[in-house]
Length: 145
Image 1: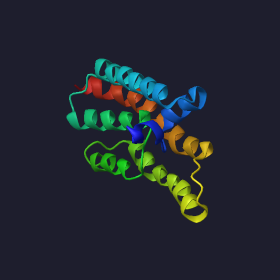
Image 2: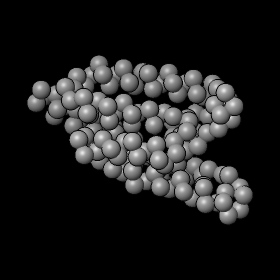
Image 3: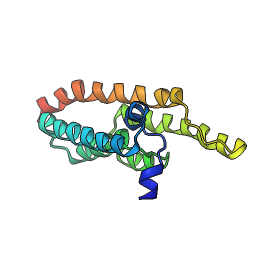
Image 4: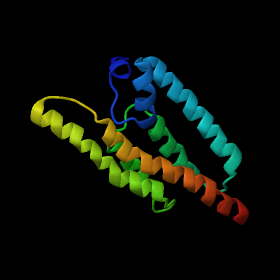
């Protein structure tokens, strides 16, 4: 409970919501609700027959809505890239290393500070690619099936 009450790191949607609410538990519940909605919409509207793609988006969306995303969490997504190659995952894997700046600053100066600009640089391209993939690639996959 202490971890969930007090710890956040590198969460995109969570950090955005929490910047307005400034209440960790409410922000977490809103992210859980949003994840559930997006998850359901994905499964209702994509009708994919490829489990590896479904697993990829399920885990990717969980990371996008999570309040804690350590760079090594993205490693599990990388495992799926050979069977579900998606630009969003490739960019996420590459940009996830930007969080090392927070860790380096902590080790060098003893200050744990997340930078909003880094979160934007890390997540904005990934979210844009996810939307693009689901809109354009989703139609292409649905036609084939």
